[in-house]
Length: 602
Image (cartoon, rainbow, N blue to C red; front, side):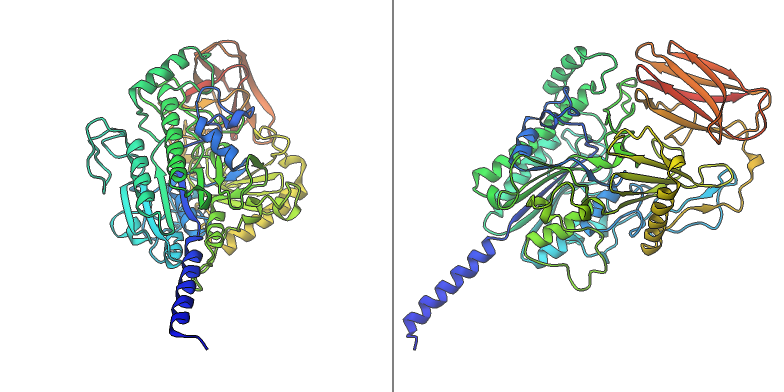
């Protein structure tokens, strides 16, 4: 029989063991970098890594943990953030396929009819993350975590703020970018941030605040979600770093893919932030029990998007095709590094595909908890076996796991219309809605194992595989109740005259769009040809061999011109060809070119 003293000792021992159990819950720091593309770091010396950007801390972190070479997100920021916090495919289940803007709506729908010049009607996109969604922060809070959001939110304002979605605290909350004040104090257009001294750099302020929060919460498990505004526009960086990268850019070739000074400086500041947060964890002795995740939210901005440098692309995702706002690989494959010494081995490159939706079940499992019974569905799959490196790259269950994207935008970068894709194994099938003027969809198929740049469309020679993947994609769209574009009953082909759709743009005139070496880009021409002349205005930083083909819908070339110099305006008479619809195909063989304008004149 226990004496009173023995009972007291037993109770103390029980409480000690219980407290030890609580202390062993891992802390979680998830850093999401805005517009940070697959090649926007040195990649620890990998061939695809940048030689312009300097990222020693990211290189070091990759050696301390696991780098995922095939990590996927949505092509745009708001949907990716919603995917992380819900574990759901955003474009399909959440009806959030584009970034939240003034045109987003509370209750998305698919209109019965639309503009008479469009053969296809596209759905609207939701303007918030619904409060009915059970977020990752809410689940972790139930499991005993303190939860804290820092930086970009872009999932709705006011009643949809982070503190209404499971976060105990929120800091420097904003929408698409760092607000009207830009990256330097005094800040404007973001909230819940006390003003710093004039000239303070927002990226450094967020980093210091995160380190202070780690110190404050060090004695209990915490979930910190740092959503950096870097490297989103406006392209503003610390002056000393800009000077450094201007000097580096001056030594780069005029056709180098990475040569934007402010972008280089912003990437270095992002790298410094990640290094400091990692150091803060180490100094407090928390690093071994902290899951540190660093990931991009979509591909890099692979076009000229800076009014101060109108001829210099912000970045390049090459060898991946296209970039942000495209669901080609350059828009959806991003860097991902995970450090968690308890289970993750060091210096491992994981080749199996994963998706940001996987972190919902993964982090809950590592936190020793499960999703609430009322959580309706989780599209993600726990990647704990991959983090433990107990699954090989040839494991057929993981390798053949299908991944999806629903991006029904009326226009995207890299294609004139939106669509959906399925990736299974090495193959990726795209479905473009209403690509042809009669409303028919277009399909493209690529083998990513042999064609990472997606230049060889295999759809025409693999009808059976296209059919199989299309059936799986259609089943998924139905199961997720996705809003799928449909034919427009009000479409009037005769209303479309002298119009071409510029790849990746909402308008034809005045849009700069840089195209990588060797990429074949399609432009759709609507008018029935008579005595028209197609004019293509090009710019290039260096003379380039350019080929322009006009083909029919079967791909047969009906007109062709080649020339050796740019900038120039190519004039292509198209009289003498039959009435119908045609494609303009532009290929720069030596150096990137910028397509400024396509016009069709009689």
